[in-house]
Length: 234
Image 1: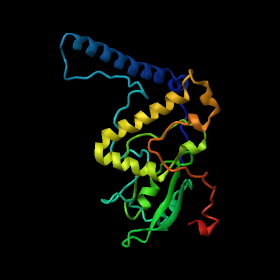
Image 2: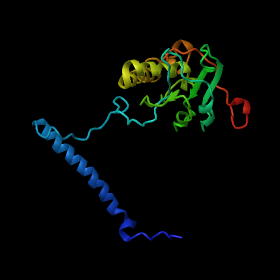
Image 3: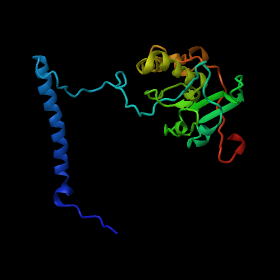
Image 4: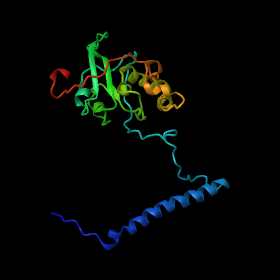
């Protein structure tokens, strides 16, 4: 068994680590000061200074493998690609996906999801649903964080129409257009939730309910299903 080595005198007083942190901060401060001054005189334009992103007003692009909000992919005829096989709901460790299957009008497809909902409050964004799907029906490549505010728990449930709408916007406007539309929707929700001029929003009525990113059909609250104990829920 490897024993923990005793700390040295300098490690015990933490002074070297504090100086290392201050050195990094001083380096960035000095570098930004020199580069910004040089940019004022038209010098060193090829070298960019470090900038502070004013999040969430300004957002940088996430990497290609970032797991963002979900979307349901669609076929060429506009129908949802999902076949309601329940593999995503079975693989989900948080049990946040709820599916109701129905007979598909397409004779080539056996089933389709009449209802497909994701409870984003329970979702841990692990991506297992994407890996489990055999027909590439669900993806997390919207490159946008999920919403973080709402009036009640139902506001955090993403419906089938909302998930499909993201795929339509992504196909029409591309990645940047989808991000802009989703972020505009988020800002609209935030403005209504935190608007001091409208205190009546705190009481939450259907009249003041903010509009959704898409206009989905109203659905009842998700039941709390334990798929490990209830075989019929699979």
